Image (cartoon, rainbow, N blue to C red; front, side):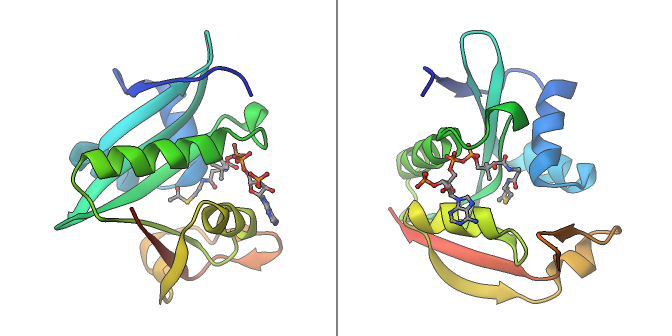
Length: 153
Ligand code: ACO
């Protein structure tokens, strides 16, 4: 895998939003957690490769509220690397648990998170119906429910 340098996002430009919106189609929701959370970007020598955003949600709990890899660089291990970094960073923030949520239709993401040690925790039924104006379909499945996962760190 290419060498990656990961650092706190310095500016919120359109290239950053392009990535964030891959993971979450609502700019309003993205802006809400960007204002409250910590955003990290991963760079190859000259290109923005990925992003993740961490949010403290409860005492000793941090959630990865957004994670995305540049479409042209997906399936090369960068997502796994970002999750490992996010887990380390959450530990440094004093968390004992890290959480992540994704759609019922996000089959690859559910696989990846479990490969990284996350376990299923709960289902937030109709989350995407309640919070997103447009219907979302992936893998031929309507995205309705948020599957919540957690890992002890
Ligand atoms: N079945 C089994 N395993 C699968 C499947 C599947 N259908 N699809 C993917 N995987 C596995 C791969 O085999 C691989 O596992 P491995 O590490 O054992 O080889 C892993 O998932 C993919 O790993 P990476 O290459 O590290 O992931 P990538 O760099 O492509 O990043 C990400 C993953 C971030 C989900 C990327 O695809 C992306 O940006 N997608 C669009 C945005 C998105 O959906 N973000 C997450 C939304 S949820 C949230 O943000 C909280």
